[in-house]
Every structure is written in C-alpha cells, then in structure tokens.
Length: 272
Image (cartoon, rainbow, N blue to C red; front, top):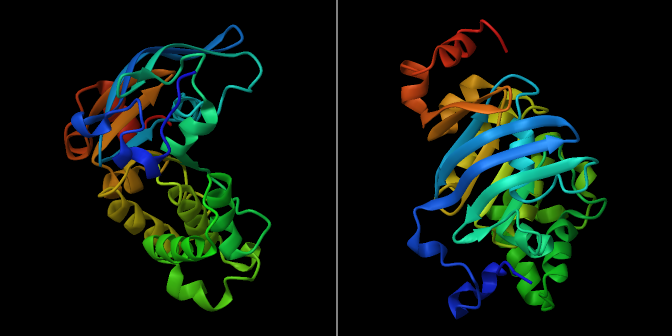
C-alpha cells in the first residue's frame, strides 16, 4: 500500500515523498476523466508550482471542479467516474489504485463552496480532526486551536466563545473556520472550490487577503467564476473550456494579452 505522509513526521523522513526538491507541487499528465460514456476532462497536461495560487477559470460545466476534486480523489464515489493518466505528487501517481485516500487528504486538503463547519463548537471543529490524526494531548490541541484560528485571522473574533456552536458564526467566519480546519493537519496543497461565492463583499475580501498570506506556506489551487478575484489573488491562470485546458499562463499575461482567441472571448464576456 502506498501511503502519503502525515506532515508532522516529515522531518523524521518517514515519507515516500521528497517534496522539498521539486518546484512543482503537482504534475498532471494526459489526464482524461469520464462519467460513464461522457468525457469531462480531455488530455490535460498541467504543472502547478509550489507556494503559488493557481486559479482555475472557465464557464460552468467546463471541468474545473471535476479536475479539482480529482486531485484528492473526491470524485471516486461518483457513479460512473473513471480517471486515466497521472497526477504526480513528487514521484507518486495520486490516481493509483493503491493510494490510501485518507492519508492523501492529509497532504491535499479541501474547502468547499458552501461553508460546512461540523455541528460542534468552534474549538471542536479544530480538535476533532486533530484527534482523528493521533493528537491526544489536550494542551497540544488547545495550542493548535489558537495557532490555526490565528492563521486565518479568526482568533481575536472568537477567543471568548470557543465553546459556542460554529453555526453561531457569520458565513465568512464559518468559511475561515473551515480553512483553519483544513490547515490544522498541515497539508502541502489546499484546494478551494469557489470558497467566497456565497459570501458578501467584505467577507470575500478577507478570504482573498487570507489566501495571499497562506501561499507562503501552502500551494493553493482555486476554482473561481469571478474573473476579478482571479486577477486579484492568482499567480497563474488555467482556463478550462469544454473539458480542455485552453491556456495556462501567468495572471498578468492572461488578462493583458491572452494567447488564444477563446481566452480573449471569455475575458471580454462573449461567452461564459
């Protein structure tokens, strides 16, 4: 069984990965994805660099979320789903049959479009995954609750009510809590599927500011329908259309001088 290392043990070299020696966080090669007889992703070749925000854009149904969810195998239980090709994380194909997906998701965390905190207290939203991954010390868990709530800028807002329900938080606060929950097991890669689409402009701005700060420590892959958001936060843009990658380039280049006519048409609002 191929296993994906729990980040706490990396310094002990108890991992099949050697992520420090590679500038690429993910290397996608000839990826084809099917739902039954329908092909959703076609011959995608893509490199995602470490410590950058890569934004996946394109019209609805173009394959962005299918691609994103395939990275940490969230599509595996969808009826008729089948993936061919390689998603390399260091020298391991994450699509291999013998990957332990539970361990994989320690390395590749995910935050969804709608905030989905656990129906527990604010603190337990952090301590529960810590317990599930082997941390038993109450002191250590309390320290990590503070650490990761501070990392997402939530600590000062909630420190006096950690035992209250996570549902008492605003939508933007709930989403930051979900990001903190994803980060507390120390992933290398963070996947976000339209994390601000359900939020008001103020909460959206806070999430965007947070992502820019987090890329110092994490590789971030972001699906967004908001072209302005992609322009504000992303280092590079991947434009999907009808299951194919039309263009992948630096953000400034994409918006100022796209190489493909379909990219220009999408940016200018001719479709999408």
